[in-house]
Image 1 (spheres, each protein chain N blue to C red):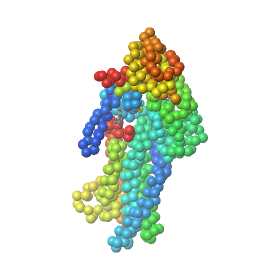
Image 2: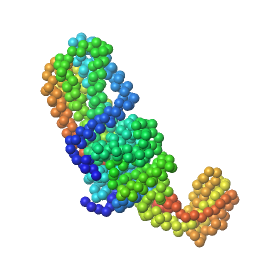
Image 3: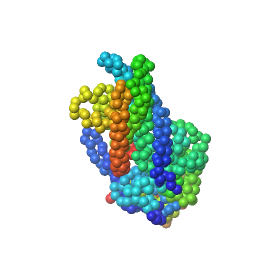
Image 4: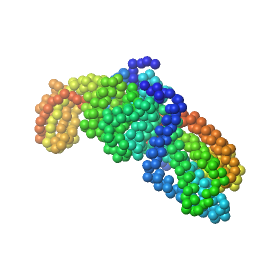
Amino acid sequence: MTAYGTSRGPYRFWRLMAVGLRTHVLHLSRSGVELVMAVFSPLVYATLAVYLFRAGDHPDRLLQAAVGAGLMGVWSAVLFGAGGAIQEQRWMGTLETLVSAPTRFSLVLMPITFATSLVGLYSLVATVVWGVVVFDVPFAPASPWLLAPAMLVCVVALGMMGILMAATFVLLRNANALANALDYPVWMFSGVLVSTASLPQWTRPITWVLPTSWAARAVQAATGGGEVLRPSLVALGLGAGYVGLALIALVWVERRARSAGTLTLT
Amino acid sequence: MTTDLAIEAVDLARSYRTRTGWLKPQRKTIDAVRGVSLAVGRGELFGLLGPNGAGKTTTIKMLNTLLLPTAGSARILGYDVARQPLEVRRRIGYVFGGDRGLYERLSALDNLRYFAELYGVEPREQLPRIHQLLEQVGLTGREKERVEGYSRGMRQKLHIARGLLHRPDVLFLDEPSIGVDPAAARELRRMVADLVEGGTTVLLTTHYMAEADELCDRIAVIASGTVRAEGTPDELKDRVRKLDVLEIEVHDAIGEEHLRLLRETGGIERATVETKGTIDVVTVHARPSHASHASVLAALGDLRTGKVTTREPTLEDAYLSIVSDAATAGSEG
Ligand SMILES: Nc1ncnc2c1ncn2[C@@H]1O[C@H](COP(=O)(O)OP(=O)(O)OP(=O)(O)O)[C@@H](O)[C@H]1O
Ligand SMILES: [Mg+2]
């Protein structure tokens, strides 16, 4: 009877994404811990950024600092969100029901990671708003019309990278350790808060392959001046590359998980 | 691909590797399932019985593609579970007991809408189907409440609705009646019977013997990962029908000593005690001509005994005899 289920048309794809996104954003938004984090972490990030830059005598770059701090929030949200979502599903026992569904597992994972990066987008906006409201950061972006698209690109690129992260979390039972290890290095190498120019030479290639660096560059350019389009495209391209990698990896990951029996805790 | 078999397993085996200890990790291999072969026809209701840890859930998870077998192979409606998982998943439903496996912070309706999409139910058909199932499992009127507020039985009903969304041809029910009240359990049995009536193949595990007896066309009893007996409920009962079943009510506390004496009495194969309220009930399986009421009562000696009844063997008697035979065979071998 499943003629619709077997068809791989674009309608089915977008419907699956929409329903999945709605489900997981709703589920995330109803978690008490998530809510507290969502309110307070942007405030903490904004405070940190503003004080760092005031002390550093760069009052002109306050907005950029706030945006940079917000980007940190996006990355944390995706990293812990994608990983946490998988871990939570393992706890809840829903990971098995997701895998036993006749939908390709990568398509099931995509809305989950995009839901977390949507939470990240909120965190980015909230950080900037806190900065403007609480610390009187002047809101005068260099390219006001490009700021919103650049932020969106950033969230999409991060969401795409999140899929690869999620894939590893399906495989590893104690994936939280990995998330902790990846939190700070990635935003450091991405030049989110401090310029990558001050980092040693050997870190350059890491910076180049991270879509986060290019997304951050685009958002920074939109706030502080510079070219927005090119880094945006590179970020999206790299993001798409990571999705491709994730799709290949997931076929293997799912098989490994079935063979190792890591879909449940029991 | 055409085949008359809905489920076909050949020498299915699965072992788990576990690590114990932290400073000095030790690798251990647990052979959960060791060579299970099953053949279940289309439209059949097949029961899988066995003690805790026998390997029932592991067997089901290999059949529903969640676990890869370490040896052997299995096909569902002709599709290989290891190599064609998507084809298999399209045609099966999986319902497990307990209260996990649902999105707690979402309503029943939102849970079902999400899974309907994942299971590829035609968009136009989704809502009518969901409401039909909610009605069928008796959750209508509560569907907008969050699952966190549901009782165990309500969650179980929601699970069942989830498993049936895409009208699967083969349904795996792993202890579906756990934590369900008697009225709802009867309702559930009727639902399962209706599904089978409509042509669905069902593989059921349960610890309730009466449920298995009422529902199953055929039963396999597994213990320690291998099939110990297989047949219709009546065939399994016939294995113990050679023996008389005597139930003796005892008003004093009965000790190990008495049971030992009973088991040593000629003609008595098995003796077990069960406490029912204020009295103990001793169940004795005896070879017909050998043990008389008198010799049984003699073995119980000074205890105050009440009513003595002889009854037909039940599926539970058959199950217990098969499992205890398996245990002795296991400890000797
Ligand atoms: N993920 C796992 N890792 C290690 N061992 C496992 C795992 N899952 C099951 N086992 C072991 O495999 C054996 C069979 O377990 P299984 O869950 O299949 O039993 P079962 O027949 O379903 O029991 P129950 O009636 O309690 O549900 C048990 O010894 C169990 O400890
Ligand atoms: Mg089990």
